[in-house]
Image 1 (cartoon, one colour):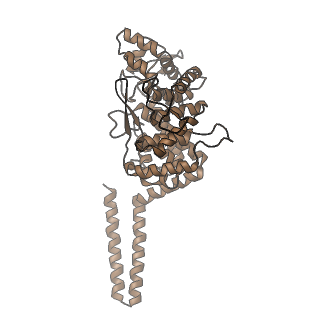
Image 2: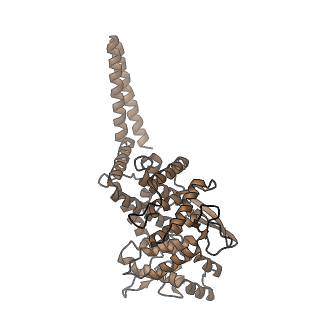
Image 3: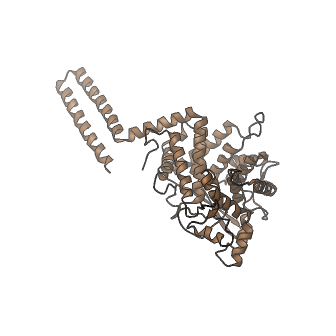
Length: 445
């Protein structure tokens, strides 16, 4: 496994950008990617999800939840993830992006034709619920925002989704006055407000320029007063507040202060730090449409990005935080170029890796805007790696042995005991040889 500073010629910023580019490349090499034809259009590769869609609309493409396998499965989460990531891949991805946007724009028509032809169709209830799911609408909005107009215009779709989200917010009866939030599904009665869909909706509407203050107040209230709040979901809440709850104008008061950010984060960090020792995500269950649904929350990504922003000299450089960043970066250096949780199934997730791209970009942005903070983190990481290396271990041991020799010599000299001085030096040298040998054995494991 590589280290964060394994290449002495690469800064932490460079490694973050390289990891992000690796994941983008993996999306472009996915079986569902559509390569441009000689005529400038789109042609299917081997991805059966896209082949299925092509059977009724040759100009459309689809994407599923898995990145590295051929499957007919497709859905809004996967399509939104692909649009978001491929929009950062340059003009070579434009044909695929246009085909994916067409699938979203003509979703009902395409899936209805597939249903009529009995060809791997998503059922009609799934179709209906996909575009009333708050998380899917918010992720679509965030993905479409990054699509260049030179590729395809998405302004009408973004306006449509923002209006759906805004009109779907409900009053929070148990919270502060004049606060609003979302349940998981628009129009579902009764609607129980929840922090997870509300956090996603806040991200999208904040970028759209809408007034998000009623929703921010609900999220802050939940962090402060809701004793039943899932601690892993709370990381998503804080992420949305720290990076998206920004005032519309420079003279407007902040929706969340630096002191509030740090107070929320410190409570969260103290509670969740023991769970940062290995790669873990969280699966939130909710009940909708007569059955249970699930959404994965890569809470460690969110917590680390907030740590870099509010506690760059403490939490961000902690051993567990460093290990999680190292895991993300080192996995992108493998042949697959993708991040995968050990308990996350057999195949890397499109959605999880799209979120990883967003987090890596967030960290790189923070690095550029706050170089001194990240300089400290980068130097700290490099010092840790040096001390944990074979040469560093031997150096530390050598310094320790020298100190011991000096102590023995001083003690023997004070007592004027030549035998004590000689025995101290000999024992110190033997200890040096033993520990040096132990270092070699440990390195060979």
